[in-house]
Length: 312
Length: 264
Image (cartoon, rainbow over the protein chains, first blue to last red):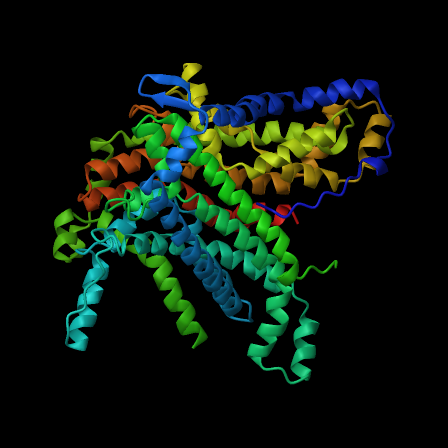
């Protein structure tokens, strides 16, 4: 979700009104508009409609008003998946921003091999999530290579060290998803942060240096405020992404054990395509929309306090 | 010190790929016993992967879907973006705002109705289901429109003086001038479509129509401990995107971070 600044430029448009252009314009838009009408506008309306229907294995069975919403709010599994999703947001987003910034700062210097490092850190971003998840099923397994490493550390320390039971324990399953997601996405925040850091005018660092600011102070009082717009953007984008997390847990843990690592989106999927409860699944999807919408709204209001824009 | 940390980080990032490759090149017993004698290196896992699941078919499906979606989505978005950016018509601003508003709607909201639409059209488990709904992107339209607005309007006027139609202006003025942004967008769309999981999972039912990610996920379900085969499959799934990434690194990074940069 990007920062949208609409500056209507219609008025400065220098060319004259041409009636024939109207029809031409509609022809240009037509293919796109037809698709949007069916797969977006109609779909959004239909989703709302379906959420008011009771939907059984055989199809729609009747209008039930807000029952699906009420049932969702009383459903303990929904709340479990909502809590899991919040867990993913509050772990993944800060860790990913912090790690991405850390690596970007390290790379934003006259260092040798910058291109190679950037290439490596970005590599997981382009990988197919499913393939990544499959490798992490192997890596995080108790009979996998990381368990060997833990065992090795244990024998060095002289006491047994065991890898957490990522796939068998409800306490750790979510962390498996967090680890996979961090590996997969940190390169993205790194690249965006690196571009932002490279945009900070060098004179500002020099001036701060002359004033006797330490490296940390230069980072804290020059870099951090000047890239706050990027931080805001990444924060919003990654949070919305974490709200919609699905593939990673679906392939890595299948949401289990029990529902310990299941995100809301997987519960929507299960309701719609495993239990054929399209009405309830749609209601949950609208709750998800409400959460994301509320979050975006709050962020847009509070950003003034901590985001620095050069134009202001 | 800095280098030690950066190299350590690189090792962590690369280790999964390395594990994937090594395990895929040895018999499963090698992995179980953690012994990888070089004389046992074999490609047989790759051949076997193609035998136990229709991997060739998955690759074909993924390729057809990804190429078609990338080309057509950019074409359709470009046409609409051209009208939004450079033609005047009634309802232009309102319609554009409506397009923008859809960026707020998470894909999960439209997932169920779109599945039902596809089913009712008789498209379930066909290429049409995998391709058609993916052709319409508010993000692509928005990014292209932003870019097109930056191109001086004088160019259009001059072309019109010479009697060029709007279609010609689009094709011969605007499109050639926006090759870089289209390349970045193409990569963004390509990798998004190639890796897409939820939608193909929902609208495919037979092995014949599965794409690579969906096929792989079923593969995990059936062969959850045949690590050698799973890793071989993963390598095959990664290869095309990795090759393109290594060849066109700059455009690739631009493409993926495009959504981030485009709006500001």
